[in-house]
Length: 104
Picture 1 (spheres, rainbow, N blue to C red):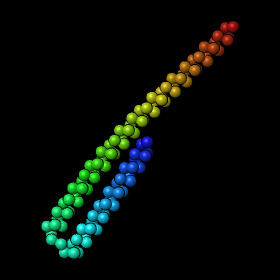
Picture 2 (picture 1 turned 90 degrees about the vertical axis):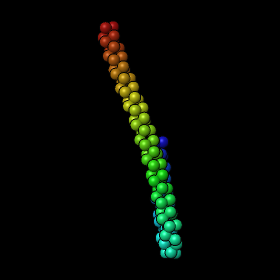
Picture 3 (picture 1 turned 45 degrees about the vertical axis):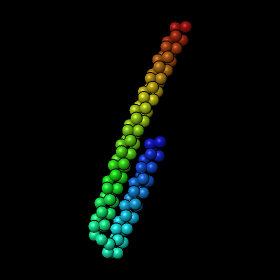
Picture 4 (picture 1 turned 120 degrees about the vertical axis):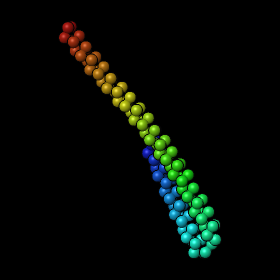
């Protein structure tokens, strides 16, 4: 799930970068068309705000992925500890049975 989330975040980033690139191309076309400089500045400021919001969104997605990864690591650690405990118990039980066999 974590890998899938990371993949989605990367895909989202790539989409945002493509959108920003398209916005820049649009701006260049507007400049070449000699649009009103005030309109161009407003468009630039709007695009900057969109890019800022996209970055904030990507940061929160990344943070969520990091938290999920940490949670999964903790769960994995618990499983490994449980496996270790089971192995110790089996060894203890084997030793007890060996001792009982010797006594018989």
